[in-house]
Image 1 (cartoon, rainbow, N blue to C red):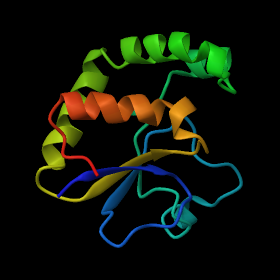
Image 2 (image 1 turned 90 degrees about the vertical axis):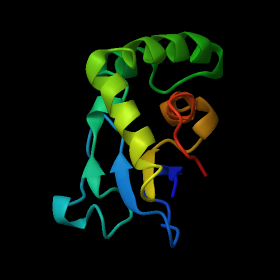
Image 3 (image 1 turned 180 degrees about the horizontal axis):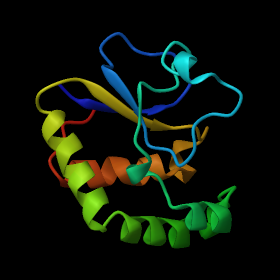
Length: 127
């Protein structure tokens, strides 16, 4: 059992489990009924996404701004709802396969790389 950190829209792996979209907005131009079939996500969970304010300030993320973005996103993830969500996913990772993702092409400049670290710090089993 484990969590995979994935790029939404990428081909699913055989044992990936439920795919969770940790994104602020659903995909544009895709009918809601097709999200899962198109390997986008099965469940939308914007609680783990950067705030709209943070996205507007840094999108697209420039490598020179990564440190500031990272610090601000980590601060957002200290809020009660986000902390509880991360703790829940960490516990679930010990019971079942699931995946969490975002649309960004480069994980090194995406909040999902930080989310990976936050999940690991809560004891999540990661792949």
